[in-house]
Image (cartoon, rainbow, N blue to C red; front, side, top):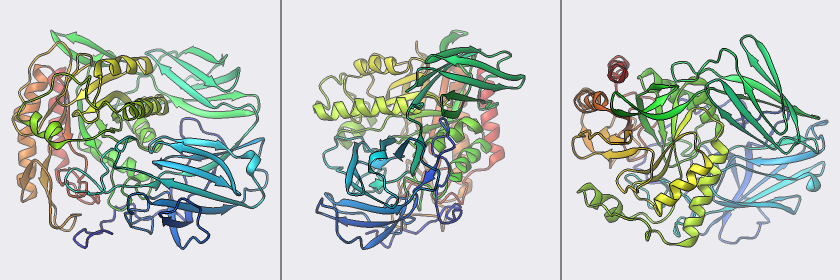
Length: 570
């Protein structure tokens, strides 16, 4: 259970519409008119036995993890516990076409799913969506049971910033269902997946599960039609490019027999070139400064899951108001709503893989801080299963998020955590996606193969050094200020410099940009990611408080910094 020294902080989105939280369509890039949401109140039980209990003695609000206040459970369970969920439902008249699919946005980390006493599937991995065909197990009245469990001790599966012994830069762990559970019905032959590859004036759309489909793209000048067999490359007249300043999206439909989906894409390009002798990242053919923030994706009342989907848009818009154009989604994969909001509102995403493997403070933090860094990662993190699970998680992350135009940059390994054979992993990643920037080793343990030079600087001034590759300061800052009444841990704080009041905090932050980041941008720095969007539990170095009710800096001053950074590279 949580200590009394932890304040119960509620975000402004602690109220949700009606009785069903997160009752929005969970897959914006492949939308059908078939949607039955299973979020809401479920029966719940936690126990050490892995057998389905006869009695479910508690209630839980799905999709919130049981460790969160919003779930109604608010408890961290012992290692080795099994979580059981039960929900009864009946589908509306006329809902069933031919096949019925049961979807889970994410369940941490492992689960088995039973419908009317029949096992319909199992899944491994806490951050990716999955579904099961439940047609043969359906009845008029249905009982759905989910068994979930995880293991943070063996470090095999990707687990991110979770730790049972939370504190400092480690946060309260979550388990079980933490994204939307939903059902759709489809014809026997249906579009099972799509892949979208944009360029400056055309788009390639590939459909899976069907032999051909008619694609209809909406433009300002009417409609463009094409036939995918199963792919189509379609030219876009008078193309409009996507950017944070103009996040233009093209909507389209794809129809195959009795199946029809709606989706969207954007046109944008990414490349690396030397401009006036400086290695730069170009967005849509022009040098662009990626002015960003580390975004952990934790919330005071829902932990991994905000109270309502609007919370994502609120964070994005607030950071845009402060002049930022980039969020580095740090060691977490979000529900697709987050990426859709970045697509439509105009926020670039640097997407991290979710780390696994053992983390050592001495090896991975202390020694690099004093500039003692290992030279090779071939013989590190040699556990075969751990390596296999990282690669599997990497592949699933890229596949799931590939179509989102806001994602411009992938981060593979962060500060050596779980890092192995980085050169080989870079080559593998290029086969998954060769259209975006790849940061192989964010921080200090560099291999030979990466698209960028990626630096983390916290405890000394940043001094830019020209390189053959674009340089990205992928973490810096981390200044701490604790606004009274909006603190999670009343006894402890974590950060890299500490300030007693808002004025001192803001002045130090502005000075950091004016004296280090803006001069570096003029000299060739391509991007800078400040730590961070919001406070997270003990870590009080956000621009927002953990409950998102306090912004610690002024918008006018921060927008002036953004303008200077933009002017520095033009």
